[in-house]
Image 1 (spheres, rainbow, N blue to C red):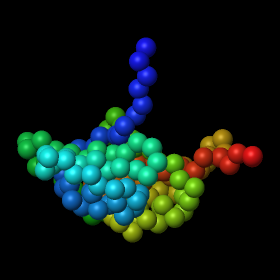
Image 2 (image 1 turned 90 degrees about the vertical axis):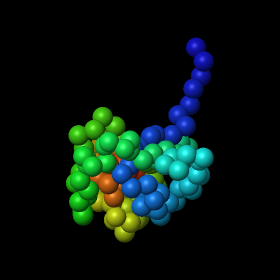
Image 3 (image 1 turned 120 degrees about the vertical axis):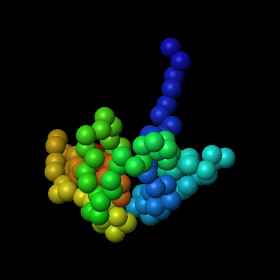
Length: 132
């Protein structure tokens, strides 16, 4: 069987440029533009990135964005980001238009459910520390 590795997650967005700024500022990603004006790849410094694509023309009017964003947790996907600084990342998400819930723990991993500015749910977590 051929080997494959994850390149990026894919998120459809209503407003591309604010979402680009969010993922740059909150997650330190780098925007790589494509020849398509409604599509970018947000590259991570280590590991898979996030592709952002504007919604097809018929759909944006069906989505009402609120401030703060409504948690869009009725979708079949969730982006998950590992971090060594859960509190710092939570603060960055809040500072750049997202939302955060209180962290929780399971089996030595600390998790936090968050949203981006359009309400897409993202999870941030700090893996358990391993001994050398």
